[in-house]
Length: 128
Figure 1: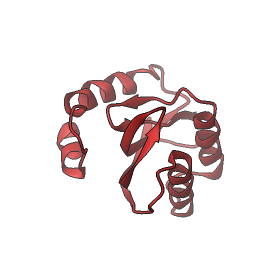
Figure 2: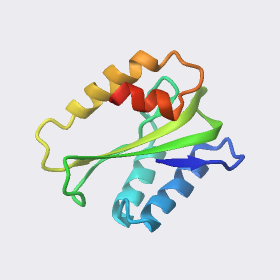
Figure 3: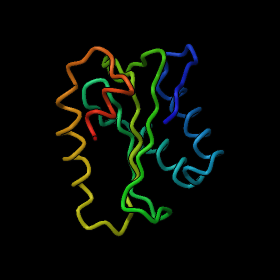
Figure 4: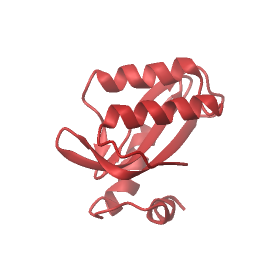
């Protein structure tokens, strides 16, 4: 988990800065950082409520999935939607049902998507 407290409302600025931090802390590798940014720049970002979910299929992770969370102190806007949390999802290329994680995330996040501000506590409660 990472808290982003810069005052920008630009989604790509926040995402870029946080991905660099994750890369510097060995949470992700450079190849995945670049792939996430490129995919997000292509458009059609996945959002559920106030959560943006940048995602890629990765050959650089051993686990089936890697989830990294960014809590934004200031909301950012994606296509007129207010976002206060970014949930980065890396799916191992060998996972057979690559869409399964997104069905699970949708079912959990949809329950709390009507909240004005997603907090760390609410997010943890949704998944545990």
